[in-house]
Image (cartoon, rainbow, N blue to C red):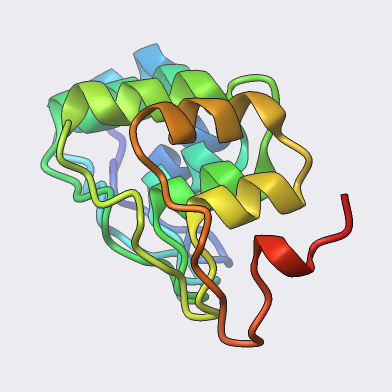
Length: 159
């Protein structure tokens, strides 16, 4: 990249790769990675670019980050949520696609892992009303019987 610093940060400590993730600019993300962008850099809120791709349903950038960088989707953000937790928490039309991209990257991904509040991705998806993601999680064996740190589980959620 002529004249540009790929890891430059703004006032929020966001890099160009963070912005590419927010806007789902896969081609830009590829170019930034090829030129040395750091996918693990945390912004002021404690999110790396993969966290933001999950937050903004940026499936094209998620695919690029998971296939063309060494970023670990299990890494939690400052609020204790990893990539899958954020996909489930924020939902959206690409949630199942994001989950499938994750499984393509790592078929042994720990889908039962909890966030800091003790919530699983299944619980977060259910709480968000994302039936399609709940079905996708159930198909790969997600457990319904876990309770979070407040003692809330599926038995206590009104149907």
